[in-house]
Image 1 (cartoon, one colour):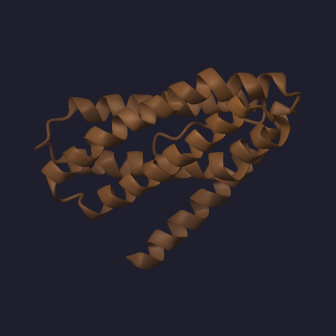
Image 2: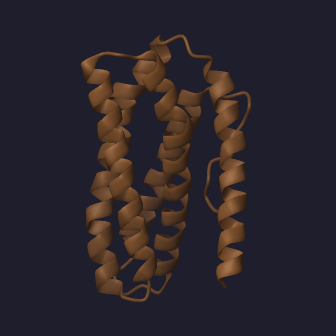
Image 3: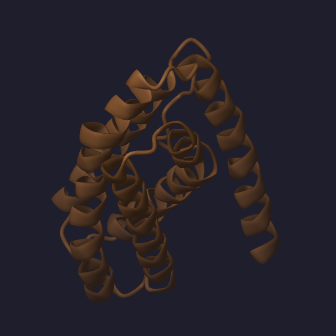
Length: 166
């Protein structure tokens, strides 16, 4: 699972998602420390892409729909749509990066756009959506359990998909 966060049924969804954000931030910081010509940069980019793919799937399949179901203000709906658009853009940039892992300059250009997008997304979620979830009366431990189970399922499916591609 690389540097993915160990998911625990004892955590609530906010703690779990915050921990994932911190893990992604650490990966981004490590990537930024590598020189454009560093041979390890492509592997780091691939791992970041995997983790972002897992994370955006969890948000789209569980987190955002559950928040959307309980909050109905214009501001909340706007924040959810922004999060969805950012996830779409993130996934598009990850797909592009996967296709150019052997082109250091193009990979650098893609990550120059991806990194600030991901950081903005994480900051905005923590500032706007997490408080909504906190106040909505959702069972956050149950949501964390659903996220954990879904992440394991997504990881298995993506690993199997990549196994067949090789």
